[in-house]
Amino acid sequence: MVVRMGLSRYIIRRLLLIIPVIIGVSLIVFTLTRVAGDPVTAYVNEKMTDSQIELVREKYHLNDSIWEQYIAWLQGVLQGDWGWSKTASMPVTDAIAYYLPATFELAVISMVMSIFVGIWLGTKSAIKKNKPFDHTTRVISLFGVSIPVFLLGLMLLLVFYSELHLFPIHGRISDSYIIAGTEPSGMTGFYLVDSLLLGNLPMFADVLWHLILPSLTLSLAIIAIILRVQRNSMLEVLGLDYVKTARAKGLDEKTIINVHARKNALIPTTTIIGLAFGTLLGGAILTESVFAWPGLGKWSASSIEAMDTASIMGFCLLVAFTYVIVNLVVDILYAYLDPRIRLE
Image 1: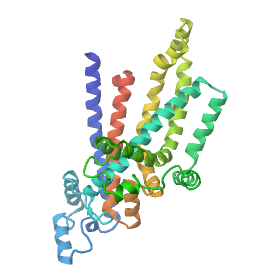
Image 2: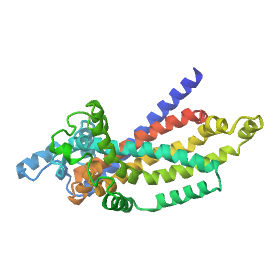
Image 3: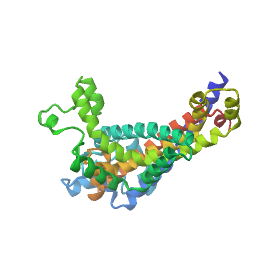
Image 4: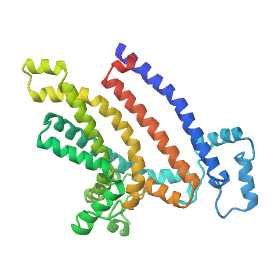
């Protein structure tokens, strides 16, 4: 009971600390909308007349003082009015809702792949310290953090599409489904989930087949980071007295690793995982551009080329809010894994 109350107080404290962070993010994004050009461009399209544009200026208080503009802009953001996306020809919030499922599906698959592979390789590497397996994972991690995302994507396409013909070059699903009109639409937007809801296992396999190369491209750098952190953390834990005592009592090595050592070694790794999710969203811009993946990253890249201010700021706001929420979840998980955190 005392433990639950301590965790509850910790969560409330963390939620309160988010407020100044959100305000800071909103101030930065608002400032960028004012220095990037005429702010009215975020709410108008090329078909509007001068009188209509002037009405927009009055509606959003663009002729008022800067603080009145900030309050009006903040109210609009809270009410879902993030401006007009010229790139997508629809409101920014609708564009985000349209493109989000593709990016979220790609990011989740990449994150799951990164966590399981990174932790497994890091743990195994620590157990086999200075052996061939350890040396091999060091090379993999060095390669993963060194190679640019776009270059890795192009290399994978060259090998697995152009030479071996094992994977598709672009898109979320094969053209045969699109031509036949059986592409999942109007459901969740997550093709893996939609194909399962339709009970269509060949379509599920096809969607998964299209996800492999983009996910591998997006996750390799994260795998490398998690691997290194998990390896160092495991080496530190394996040298602690309680692990030596467990060995002296005759516990088998598998129980020591899986039950006693790995959980404590996961504490610093958990922090890295939270930060890595934000990196995934940033990396999605390049990955989706290379694989023509119809998600937020490709949309934002097109918006940058077209100088579409509203879409760019909408993407920045979304990434910032996602970063804050993910780090809140990580902090709570961190407190769960290490109760000492709640007492600080």
